[in-house]
Length: 147
Image (cartoon, rainbow, N blue to C red):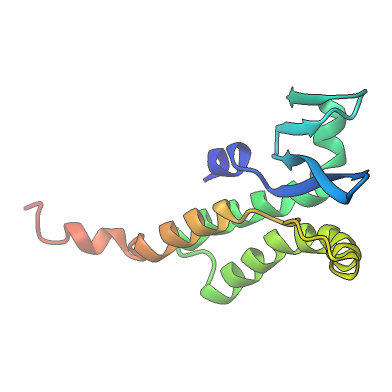
């Protein structure tokens, strides 16, 4: 589950530019736990950064809750968390992405320009699927088979 959180993007934001016809999306920027793709933070153009310490540190408020959710899925499967704790960690894992994208959504909706900005909840879909399919009592599957 931690590898899913490290590989999948936690947030997608459009890099918006102003042109003669108005706003347009120049490129999308995608932020992951250990990677970044989009408009280069160190200059002009499109860039890819993998294991960049500064970008990883700056994106911790967005990406750290996904790790808490990954830990929650593991603890739920071990019967150390209940459903309410898992749902709370799931909501908190996508909340920073929505909060970061909310000002952009308001700006673009008032200007007539529409582009998606917000979290990509792939970790939420994978974690929920794992939590729903995992047996809460794995020892029951093997009762009576060893004698």
